[in-house]
Picture 1 (cartoon, each protein chain N blue to C red):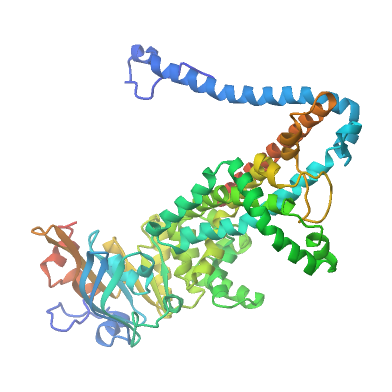
Picture 2: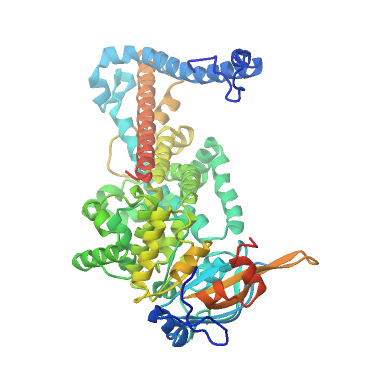
Length: 292
Length: 327
């Protein structure tokens, strides 16, 4: 890869060239407001500590990628950001997870209200067994919108944002289960966008899709990031370099003496720095493919 | 079933000998045995249908279609009209379904959606225990304990609603402990376990990822159930309900003991009545000739009804399964 290098504080980099993209420069020099601030977050499933001491900030209108080997806890961290882990019996969070200045796990915080602001797209496309229209209208409806004309508008806008409108506009009232994998995943994205969330969390959204469908979703992410903050878990490092502004690399810490393992955040920074000038040898090994 | 000489899939290429090798004796033996068992069930079913229909012919030839649709059941006068009992069967089955289905669904949702799996298990055991109580025990408990107890409740409801237009016709006097309603209640107890456990199994097949999809949009538990669990499982639940209905229609001894044994058509649910299985069980011993043939005829009709309900429930389940695959 011979992309121009943006400026990163405290690292020696080649001279920036004239082609440097202002968007990326802006990311590194003046990040937007912090949407999430996590400090020393450890996550347990029963007595198993899945993730230990994760501290990172996620910035507004950026795409943040979580990468790392299986079992490193990246999905677990993602799922604590909208309290999805509440649904798992025995799941417990220690440490601070702050969302726009408010503690997500404070007493009196309703996970339902949290999830209405912080949406999630899953690994496997999971359209509801309903029509395409009703899939997209589901979120607005549970949020109290029942006016037909408003719903029509939301459905069309969300499907357009998810670049699915042209493919489905003539069969809005057919089942969402009849779509191809890529279309179904875009339907799920449309469904998430329909509630106008602040943040969209994505858990390996392309792992079940072919390269063409993946390319569509990645374009879509770049298009919507001016309106949303996106956190994406991915196994695909190329994907992280293609779409994300910042990357967090997680790894598994094994304790052979006690036969335990836990996920840790190894390194977090601008995506280009993580991939081209990683500071931690583990990151280096992972991004250069020397470690699984 | 058609061909017995299927070659195994793992035959090495280029070896004609391996291709012609016969399958082991045990394999063929198993196939024959399985086929025979399957056919046996079918044969028994057909034989029952034929012989009961044969025995019912003398009723049908003397009474004709009039017999089926007549409401006059008077063995002393050789009048054997079936409609009273068809009516009673329908009423008791409907009461049982109306009472059992909401309770069963509530229990099924409680066990799958509310209570953690570890704590759900004891409740499942208790509900399943209801299913192993013998029918005759339900009947005896119904007539000796339950009927005298509900009698007072019926009486007070009856006197309160006596003059009210529609409700009075349904719940007004005459009231009796042994009645359509008591039979419906006992049947409801009896079908609750099967409807609960079938619904629970159907609901448990709703993919976790679909539930999470709804929660991720800010749905509450109830909204998730309505938006995801219900569309996923309503076909299967309707099937479960229809299977319960089939059981409620055919359940005999319990109904015979608590229904009141009064061959009348009345809108009063608290009044004694009769239904098809009960009249067959109660009167078969002292019947002969056309009387016995008429009871056999009732049996044939009941058999036909339960088959229709079963076929219909299977069709509903199959249709919803097709819809789920996305058509």
